[in-house]
Image 1 (cartoon, rainbow, N blue to C red):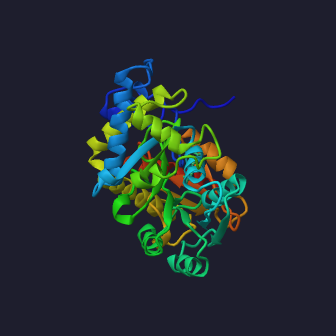
Image 2 (image 1 turned 180 degrees about the horizontal axis):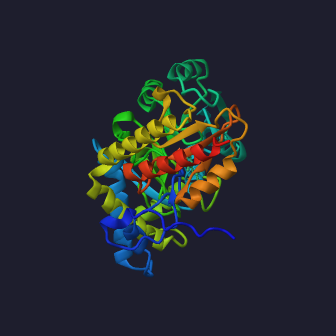
Image 3 (image 1 turned 90 degrees about the vertical axis):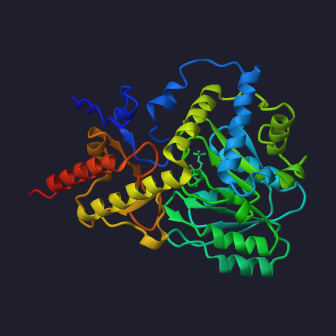
Length: 388
Ligand SMILES: *Cc1c(COP(=O)(O)O)cnc(C)c1O
């Protein structure tokens, strides 16, 4: 018989609400969220109502202020139903016109490859600039590519490559894109809200993220922060009805917070609460500090338990960390995974082809104390495994 799951951590001890989670999610999303974020979903909301529309407008405004603090007036936010990929696809398919335009895709992982795949399926002319799986995107290579191919009009990159945990050098890439005057599309799915940057300063035209990553909401919609002037010029570009980002944006603008088609009302409520809690925590800077703390404690503890991170420290994001399997053949990820789950932690399989790895996330409603308990569980598991 299976052992019942242990009750799990009391992460919600701050709010005095019972924690009903059997485990913490140490994954790249969906993440562990607070009880109060989940509680926001306990009622039904109508959408044909000014109260709901005002909430949408407030969420859009707050997103713009978080993303472009130095120049919020130049930017606008649009929310889109679906998971993060839907918003990436909507942004690409709306930013690039049906005839003409060429996209350069910088890729060093599965999410960069996914951008290339979307371009392919949408019939967007594209060129892929690959950097393997365990190296950072090099801005110099983009510089050369833009020099060599004047047909390129748009550049896309993933900021935090969740495949491995690599943090790409966004400011240096942005500088090259700006100098060549191209339209810049950034998949900041797993970094926005957890790593401070200013899209107005960097000159980003489209930034894509979703409800269930570092803002710490639940899954159900994505959002795009767009330079107002650029999205205004995208009318009629889209190859899709439901993923027409221009039309979605235009409807939200004209009708003051109205979505086209059914919106994920409960998820929106939870997201509003998550934004309030981000502010209470002290904003993106404070959240970044907590994630960085989590990640540092994670690596220290895992190294002490005999595990090696896949990436050198200088490439590593505070978001998620890949670890190599131990060298001895007796290690089984499945059994490790199950043992940690029994102790109240869910980790994530690896995604690189060049090495056997697993991943542990440091984002969500996770604190250094949770990491300490995880390390204790890992250390105990490893001690047992090495017994003769
Ligand atoms: C999570 C994530 C996505 C979107 O994935 P969905 O499963 O569609 O939500 C895209 N890019 C990156 C870098 C991500 O981490």
